[in-house]
Length: 233
Image (cartoon, rainbow, N blue to C red; front, side, top):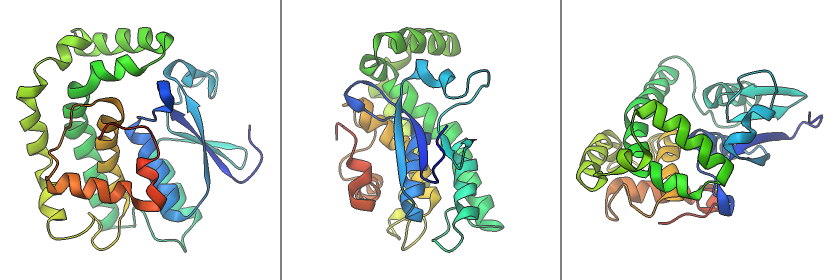
């Protein structure tokens, strides 16, 4: 366990140090938003149980002040409480409710569109031990092979792009989902798109789409943090 006050985050990784977890990207950007240093620990799927043996922790998990905090939402709330003088991530009251709505929309709708678009490509980037785990667990979940899940994405991509219309409509009028400055809602949506661009050369948005322009704007924040991992586009 790390005894220093500098937080360390267990961060899902693939080969070539590709950091692909949308939830971990939310957290990395949340720490940068608060101006708080964060050390990341490259963690393959098969190493996740070693974070806290005997428990069912997932990533992201952060280790700080000799404690562990799991779940991107809980970590963001912790950051707002711990660093109240820095710009808020989630806020309180109606702001918190709206941010939670964005999170659930992304988790249930956007993520499904992304995973079925890039799942076989992601598998190809994993280490052999992770490939075996990933194939077995995801094929059991979807009741079909990874290749069958991803097949036909050229015909389905319109549905994913259409699901992003609420984001598109907002960033036509504002630089960020948070208005003139980014907020946690920006990082939630960005994480989903980052997941795709890190693992697959199949673009989930078109180059001139307002969503793509906004994604690139978020990626450039904090000295290009979003572009720091290997990515395809």
